[in-house]
Length: 306
Ligand SMILES: NC(=O)c1ccc[n+]([C@@H]2O[C@H](COP(=O)([O-])OP(=O)(O)OC[C@H]3O[C@@H](n4cnc5c(N)ncnc54)[C@H](OP(=O)(O)O)[C@@H]3O)[C@@H](O)[C@H]2O)c1
Image (cartoon, rainbow, N blue to C red; front, top):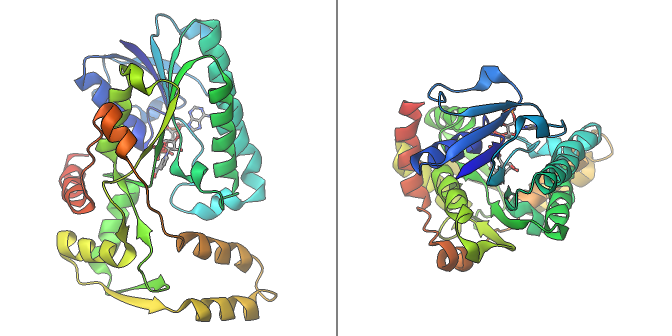
């Protein structure tokens, strides 16, 4: 199939492109900045522009779109709470998606896979990133396209952020965890997400459905560091900071230090346990993600490749 991928030069996008090529699809990549094109993309048709541009003149013979581009908070979720970035989040994620839907409708492209995020189903999240992704989903579900929405949880894999993290862990002696560390995470490995997204394209059972793409089961923050110690061969000790102490410090300092309220909100967001059921994805397109320790081993191997 001829497939247009947005956000192709981003972290997940590069893996989606690779997975599409491995499955003999012809890839058309929407690229904002040609300097970011990786080596090995000689057979890929580059469409230069942004989500908010009119790119219809550059598009021909596309069978399906994987809409993966987004303004993301990156490593620091605080950015999703910053008022000065609100317009950016909505312009890229909501308006950009609406623009792409209209483009598909105008060109008779019916198949549309949207890479959303697990955050949209977490009702307590009201930051700009989450709200803009929710709005994008609304545009999609109201359209007459043959859409599928994939909502990955936190994705890990060989990128600059994880390279830095691994470096940091290798030097780290202690880490702090707010609360008892029993709250759960359910990260998913980047190659499991890219494979799922590509598997979805030709699977008619997935049309007009949304799927969480998470790791196989939730694991605690304490377990996270045990896995890091085990696979990265580190010896990090966890220091638990009791929540009553965090709350007390926040109450005392809130009025004195500007912005602390936001950081506190993030702490509270971070200690809410995450746990997802992936059975629907397992039965509809055989989603079989690897567990965190296997993913970490693969990440260390992949780091040597990129
Ligand atoms: N990473 C995670 O943990 C995670 C978790 C859940 C969901 N997701 C979702 O997965 C998708 C990919 O995330 P990622 O982590 O790979 O993010 P990323 O590395 O920041 O990549 C985002 C991509 O979107 C492109 N982009 C941003 N604004 C654009 C615009 N206006 N027009 C065209 N392209 C634009 C970027 O282009 P440039 O390359 O030019 O910067 C980049 O290629 C996103 O939809 C994100 O919401 C990610």
